[in-house]
Amino acid sequence: RTALRHAVAAREEHEALCIVLSMAWYWMLRDLRSDARQWSELAASLGPDPFAPPGVRAPALMEGATDRPPP
Image (cartoon, rainbow, N blue to C red; front, side, top):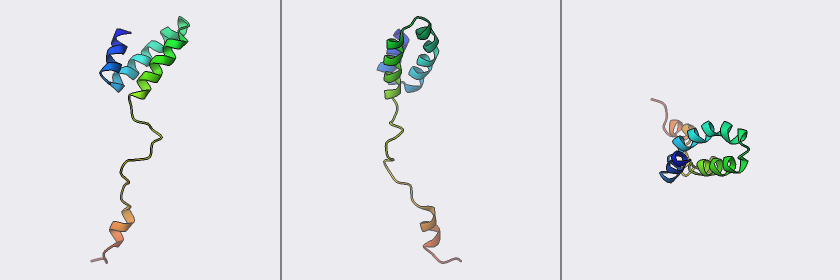
């Protein structure tokens, strides 16, 4: 738990997720579902929201290619 607490405090998303995945079997065997839920939510909250709209829209490829006549 100390390593996981440190990874979350340091905002190391990859490290925290690796520890959560490694600890999942232990939490399930010991019936520590609340710990599993709490740490999983904390580790998942470190990363960006995968459902958020993109900050900058990518330019359309066709517009740049068809703005000028062919050589």
